[in-house]
Image 1: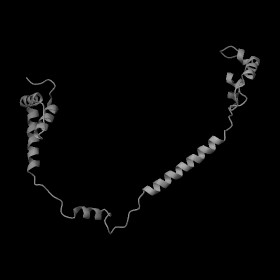
Image 2: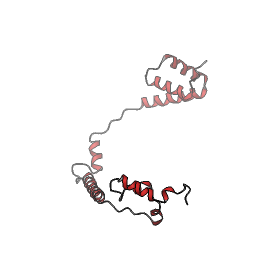
Image 3: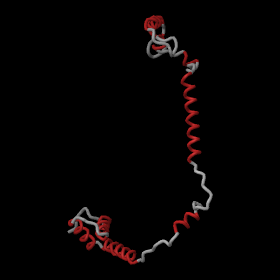
Length: 163
């Protein structure tokens, strides 16, 4: 009887580790071997994996010929006789500095000069309680003036559903 957590993929993974000389727990190894014996599709995949491994192991080792790296670099235009390539990094730095200067100047100007706050005509009719406490959006609160203006405002005592 095989392990219930074993399947074809897990079996092939475990047996591949064993073929590479890696350590596997003895119980896992036994479960993988038992699974491979009971499942013909897994056994066939394992045989194919072994054949590929043997074919790769029997292939002769290849070494690059002397000067190979120099020939590749020369073909790419990086060799000693090639003209120097203009790096892009200085241009990108200059562009980034120009963009940051423009951003700082724009933000500095916009933040130093407050813009006028104007609403459309239909929004001008809508007022809030805080409108009575400040004469401008940038002024400090005047509690006494705000309470007096609120008492004299007809909208303050209008029903909530509107008029």
